Amino acid sequence: MAAVIPAAGQSAPARRRGGLARFARRKSTIAFLMALPLILLIGALVVYPALYSVHLATLNKSMEHFVGLGNFEFLFKRDLFWMVVQQSVIFAVTAVLFKALIGFCVAHFVHNVPAKGQRKWRGMLLIPWVIPPAMSTLAWFWLFDPSYSAFNWVFVRMGLPSITWLGDPYWARFSVILVNVWYGAPFFLIMYLAALKSVPEQLYEAAAIDGASWWQKIWYVTLPMMRNIISITVLFSLIVTFANFDIVRILTSGGPIDQTHIFATWAFKLGIEGNDIPLGASVSLFMFPILAIAAYFILRDINRRGNEA
Amino acid sequence: MAASIVSGQVPLQKTKPGSMKKDRRRALYWSYFFLILFVVFFLTPPIYMLITSLKSSAEIGAITNPWFVYKPTLENYAALLGSAQYLTFFKNSAIVSVVVVIITMLISVPAAFALARMKFWGSTALGMGVFLTYLIPETLLFIPLFKIFAFVQDTLGIEMMNHYWVLMVIYPTLTVPFCTWIMIGYFASIPKELDEAALIDGAGYLQMLTKIFIPVALPGIIAATIFAFTVSWADFLYPMAFTTSADQLVLPAGIVTILIRGDVYAWGQIMAACLLGALPPLLIYAFLMDYYIAGLTAGATKG
Image (cartoon, rainbow over all chains, first blue to last red; front, side, top):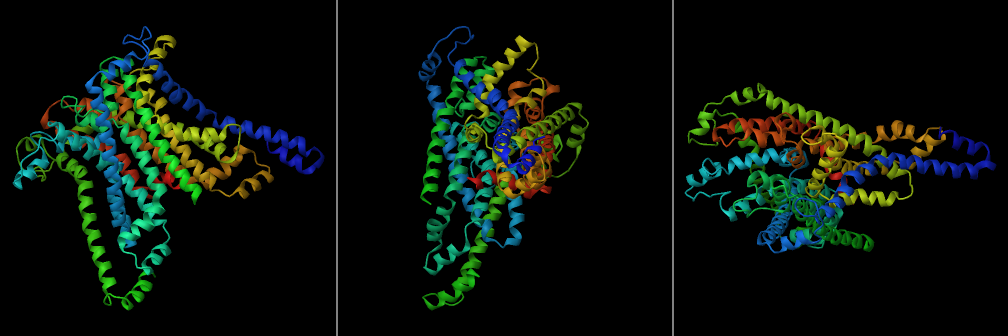
């Protein structure tokens, strides 16, 4: 149907303008129709619920009348809320930092070995990312088991004290971060490996001729060339880690004494299990501004570097 | 090539001949050393899963070396494959994931085509909007969705809570934005001359999409399919929030809520369940590793 129009435009130059206008109109209509399911999906199941959650956050527990900022006032007065804020930030920042560091180092190690063997190493190193996190976290849970912990078995054999991995607040915090780093580091590894491969070899040659040490090569060649990918992966990972649910939920369910709760698990506990949907919505809403600020800074940075280049 | 230039240059300066080569060899050995270290760290949990899954309850209960299987047995796997409950979880997961992949592709491929090739009013804004949906994580959406589902149930009489088909409706929100993003990248890399040739030959836009873009961008479509499948196979929060009864659970939620009964000695079976549950994504990864990685890296290399 649309095919007829360009043909007509070609054979009759006089009608070209009218035909083209109609053609353009049709083209944009078709394009809009093609994108319509996407628009509807995002509108109905992402944007609308997000706005609705703002509305929910202003209602009282039974959702009958409007309390304005009452839920937030209530939260601000609770110590547990500030602890959750603190724990979420510590959890996300530490985990992302270590994921990025480990990913960066291991990417270099893989890049160093002969190209023939790289596939094999990469194949093994990406496995934590492939296993569904709910299932791999259960394996960690079993490794951390209070009486049957396989780690403690090794520690005791080595003459070290055994550790109450999930029972002690500080070790529990350490454990949830450890599992998150384990799960997320391979993603950084893959990204950085792809980025390393795209750095032109000539730059290293030039640096070597100028007498640069390996550290100077990383600082003045590798890092500037990878800056955009580092920013993007850190942004993505920060969003995902900040909003993490599976790992904390399965390992500790927020315990001991609520010390490892992050926004998502606490919101789940209050909203779904505690049946206080407005309060849960208020808690989960705190994720958005923090994520938006992080995204703003990182994307601005990318744009600025992009314009300089 | 780099090595030859460098080692030709260096001896003239200060270091002894051959030291560059020695340095490289030493760097290589250190790389292997650390790689082995990290492989051990990365593979400990899955290997421990396998070890535990091969043990009988009696062996787990007896305090022996947890890292070694003295009497390997497949009884845990046999018990799981004979249990209607576990097979139900598996079936639910499979149905949900396959349907979500189909829905995702039907939505994101045409949308990506429209966004990459046919400008229309608001198309740039929409492209940005797709990207920005990442800022609204599922952990922010599950509470309002919970309320919305309850509301739909009350007004329209469609029972949405505690049915696994609800997951087919909401999982696309997790998969569609990223798949659209991947496909925009692949479509944008197809030369414009191909569209013009198709238009001159009298093809419509739908034909252009199905006859040219989809075949040419097939690697991208495979990568996006793998991504959509693994995401919907692995999601844990939505099934935890929206399904509760045993016959409606998918694998991750099913293993966590039903199989764990506070019984220490059931861990052999739980680990076997996790390993079997992780098998489909692992198999896809093993056989289609390049597509898997292409899908992962496609999003970032464009930025």
